[in-house]
Length: 167
Image 1: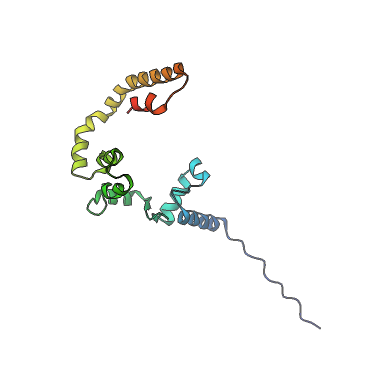
Image 2: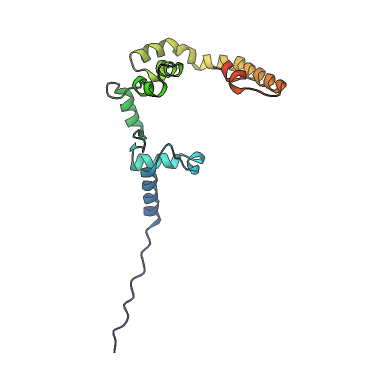
């Protein structure tokens, strides 16, 4: 008489919560700003959650970093001795001594304190809620007029006929 056949146990299914966590971890580790999947554009928040949970300081394939936790972002922002907004070294090889280089290296967002702080204090009054509200009617009139002019012309150069007039 031969022994009874050995029947392997039924495979155990991974509980859904573990499968979801595994997918979230894989999504975080595969995150690449230059190759975003279509679902990211529809709803990026699950990706941000996965990054905060599984890879809060995520190294991107291009060598940059994507930081997803608020406290980490604040710490980086405040430590200008280690992390600078100045883009002169980065942009010089890309743009050379051009107007694009000058624009991108003198912009307020690409300057560190104390220059950034001094300039921000000077212009802060122009960006109060009241100042912004006071701009609404004139800007709306300007945009409406530009759109009407382009429509009347029948064609338009979006930069020359619109964007250049609305800085």
